Structure formats: structure tokens, C-alpha cells
Length: 159
Image (cartoon, rainbow, N blue to C red):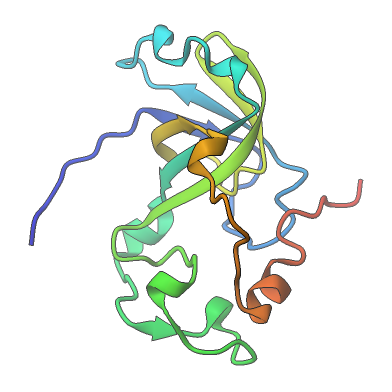
């Protein structure tokens, strides 16, 4: 097996401290660059409306109990048993997550974003601008259960 060393480039700061599956729409996160990353690494990023954020599910990584086979999404037997690569569960072989977020603003060494489903102090391993030419140029499809599972994922919490 090949091994790779990946270092974090930034850290997430927000009010979410537990990995809860729903209501991420009201969370505004600060992604703050680590000291070893120069500020100019994010020069020009404010020209993009959305970013793709890659991060480590660090709490799942600490437990080190990845799913290599299949299981029910969210451990809900109402959803079909599917392979780990057919769902977006945090207990993945390499504990890597990714999310497309809305960039609210850049401020010095920080990016403020909405729709990042990462808890406070999550290590960020990469940031990429969302480029429409890299998005599918055809209709995407997914099973019905995925829409049901995601129906409250980005809803906002009541004030």
C-alpha cells in the first residue's frame, strides 16, 4: 500500500463542536491559514463565488475505525446498505471530506464561508476554486434515498 503524508494548511473555526448531520445552513465558518502558508496563497480567491474545501474528519480519524465495506447511511436501516464509496460517511478509509461552500469574504489570512459541514478546529488540507467548467455539463443522478437523507442537511436552525 502506498502512503502519503498530508499536512494541514488551515483550520476551521465555528460554533459547531459536534459532528451533527443536519442544519449546516446557519453555520458561518472561518477558515484560517496556518502560519507556514503565506497570505498570498489566497490572493485572487475573492473573484470566485464558491470554493471546494478538502478536510480531515479528525474526530473519526482519532477513533481510527474506518468502514471499508458497506453499511446503512447514517446507520438507518430504512436506507439501503451501500458501499462506503457510494455514500459520504465520515468513517472513510482516509477520513477525507470535501464540500463546496459559498465564499462570503476574504479577510487577511481568513476565508469566511457558508455551507461548510466541518466542525470547529477541523484541519483543512486543500482549498480549490469552483470552476464551472469542472462541474458536470450534464444532469446528475442519485438514488431517491439520498435526497431524503439530505433534506435537512443545509436547512438553517430557527433563531
